[in-house]
Image (tube, rainbow, N blue to C red):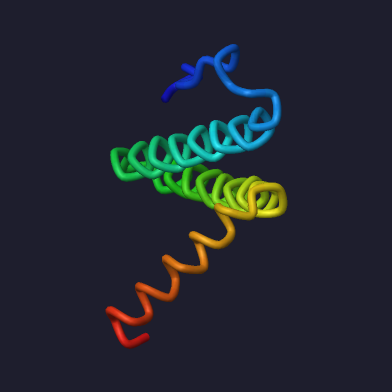
Length: 94
């Protein structure tokens, strides 16, 4: 994503705006995680690698924060997340 918002917010219904804002925030955090982990893998400098991986871990916390907020305001998303978890448990037996 790298600073490009992938949604035209002017086309989003007002009642869906907060959900879409949170989804964009989740996308941005996942993008940052991928970037920092890739950069960490590229460097031979252990200090730089350590800092990138620490920041990537912080971004994972942000994903959790945004996802928690999304699940609070989007009941359908919460139900589908639970359904997805059940399917994985059924398929894997775990």
